[in-house]
Length: 245
Image (cartoon, rainbow, N blue to C red; front, side):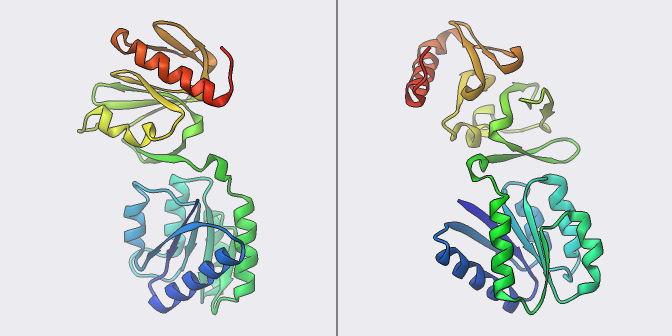
């Protein structure tokens, strides 16, 4: 399902754009969750824990301009689509620092908005839509679940090993690893095989009684007491995928 965020401090414009988008969704038989923000600070707070496929941003807003807001979004998420909608054409060149897909001048032309939405949606990979946001010591990182090999709890931090070989370390967490990793474990591809380890079963190359060997040779241990449950869950996953082992 598409996740759309609209940010505009003018409530009338916010409601109008929302109405247009809902009309577009009905016309094209699409489902989406739309969240409206009347202040950029509220959106910045939200993206610490939530991800959106598409952002529609005003530019002239209090405290944080739409241009700065777009840059902040882009630092967190390189793949989200950004559309600017504003009364001020003179900011167009500056706006492209956030790599928007279009720059619409108010009053919004509905057909031009529809054409822009169609183009934006073709660039969104809904098959890979599942993402999590990881707070590190330096910034926020949005990770596709498909690019995570495994994660490990170590010294009150969580290490995410990616398919690229990069390791992302979370900032210190206060909650238990089991609670922290709940968003990950809601995805059917992930399995907790040890008190301190979770694996992406899509990336498993070899399975033995005491370990998973993942893509690239990464080895993840299986807790002895958890082996029967881990074995059954992994075999059920393979059967559901029609894979023979």
